[in-house]
Length: 346
Image (cartoon, rainbow, N blue to C red; front, top):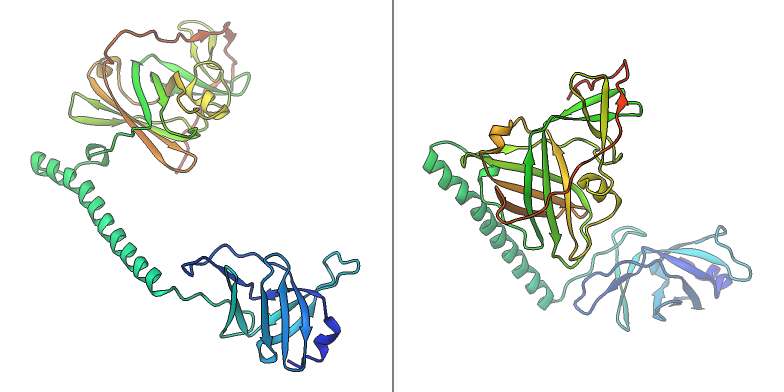
């Protein structure tokens, strides 16, 4: 580029294309920052620019510059702004600065790792591969062993699951009382609820747990894992679970504002060292007699970072404990148009 034109732009503030690449001491790339640079000096053969933020100074030859463009959209006053599109990539490392040519004007160039960092990176790749293979073996061997014992493939519930040390919990009570989930007020649709669990959980991690999802499976008769089915969107209304009184024209809602797991966990996270006791509601297909055959529950909580917290609970739970009661609200008349929610088609 002919630098005579840039002499007219002395002391303008420009942004570089490509943006200067910031590096740490091992030549690893840091997050980019589109800093302003001041055109400090212009001669017939070279251009000096200074970084307003980092105070780095870089000397560019006239063959380093592809073109200059004004930027009238930035608020200026007495300061004028523009862009410099370069044939080179500017690198900044601590108090050093240098350039490398790029393939096309304005195209970024990746940094070269130093030999020590490159060697560490190769070792890290090897460690990751070995770790992945080790984890795969740890997951597959229990499945293979059960398969050899029983002569059949097994589900993921029968494979080994790591108990989470940062979330402790127990299932204190399991009931198969027929309840309903009501939609709207007065209710228009309902869904059947056939299983209720009263659980306790304590967050022993170092940060609050924001519950995004959860799952429950039960070990029935010591040999079969049974998946419980959650209700989509449960917990928006603390009074959406209730009962239809037998042989009557009335229904009663249950107030879960103080001990409904879904409602409480939608409002706030489970704080560090906080313990809660709350009700969960499912469709499991298990009868009351089936629940008497359950020997263990496994509950997995998925937090907002997609981390899974899993705990196992032997059942019946040992020890003495109090179970929070379900607060029944005054009865309501059953609307004439109340009907079962139609199944959602896949």
